[in-house]
Amino acid sequence: MHFALVFATLVVGAMAETVETPFERTFKLMATELKLDPVSLPDTEFHVNEKPVKLTQGKVEGLSKVVSPASTCYKDDDNNVSCSLSITGLTITYEAQAEEKTFDVEVSVIDTMLDVVLEETPEGKAKLNNVSLPAVYQRVKKPVEFSADSEEAVLFDDLLKEKLEEVLKTELETGPFKEALKYTF
Image 1 (tube, rainbow, N blue to C red):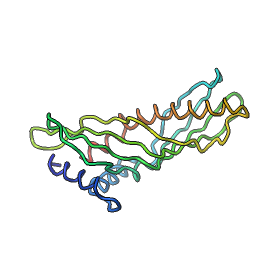
Image 2 (cartoon, rainbow, N blue to C red; image 1 turned 90 degrees about the horizontal axis):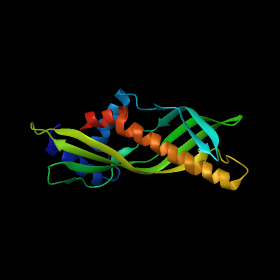
Image 3 (cartoon, helix red, strand yellow; image 1 turned 120 degrees about the horizontal axis):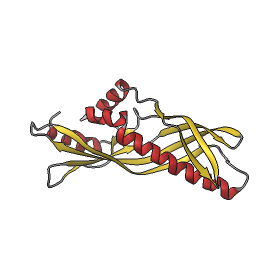
């Protein structure tokens, strides 16, 4: 797609409140083609007060439905276009094991911004240059309570969100999601 057209599409998309933009339509098509719903997540582990918590069989759902332009894009001095995309409504699930109990983990990604940088090729087309996820706002839905000890329960929630943010960043910045963005532009 030509660079100027991509820029205009993203700007119009950022101003549209309820209408599906050309960017959103194309992204949904690519997300479906690349089977982004759901996306499997890697197994991971973290420790709560020296107790290991293993997360397995992870997945993130909603990637094909929740990405939209968040603000007006701008062009820098190097002719790169920087845009922010809004991601809301993702659900991350894992099966967790801590000590001798197994339980489900479910976390909702309430809101996050994805920063995208596009560069113009010599042919005047847009090329995805960089994708980054500066912050993720999430809420732990399950388990309702990790431990009867309230301090340990809060620590679990914080460490879980931190670990899932790390996993999600890696997935969005390098995995099939980035491929979908690349083909969208």
